[in-house]
Image (cartoon, rainbow, N blue to C red; front, side, top):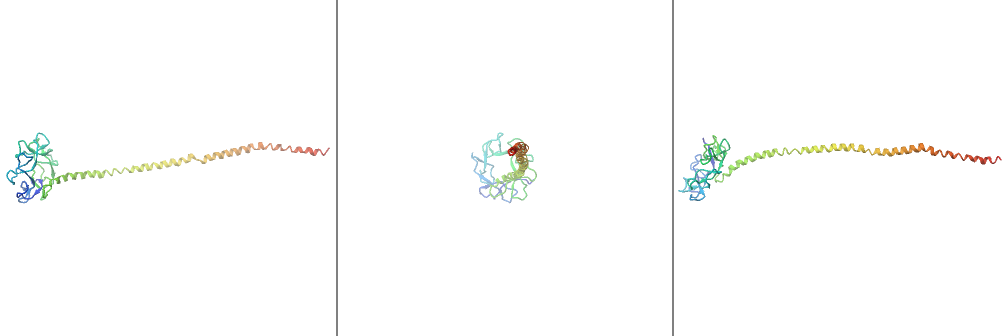
Length: 252
């Protein structure tokens, strides 16, 4: 009860290009703006008769193909050729989902013409025809504006969903925090520094210097032990004692 299909609210209809069904929820004489189409004579523009316009005038809607289990469904076009349809994309069955619409008499049972579901209508700028298939107070959202260009505004409603997609994007940089494991490789060079400290200990170049010291000691030790034996030959220097014989010569 009180539910509306939101359609942009147009100016009062006074022989102008804007025609539409009366808006029962709007001010007196107010109309829901729908572009006025040409009279229907085998032209691509078909529509429901405009009771407020000149005789034979129709509300312009793109002419769709005949409905034969295809994606295009619509209400019968009384002004067009037999079997002609006003093309409206066929939506899913209505079961408390965001997609609501008038029943499609030409489509499968319980099939709906998909229109995005908008907020409830309570004295707001959105007015429209009563919506019998939606929950109480539910509206098919189309923003109100002076021109019928407002229909892109319901597309702004799906744009709100990508903002929610931006939230997982905000959480994704937090998992990007794994650059912290880079601290682990920084910790690894520190243990590498430890083997570097141990490596100079095995190199212990002072120990190879101890080897020449040992060699020197051995060399010094050898000449000290062996040197007295070669120095013993100077003991044969005692032969200068035979110089005594010349002292014996004066005795004769």
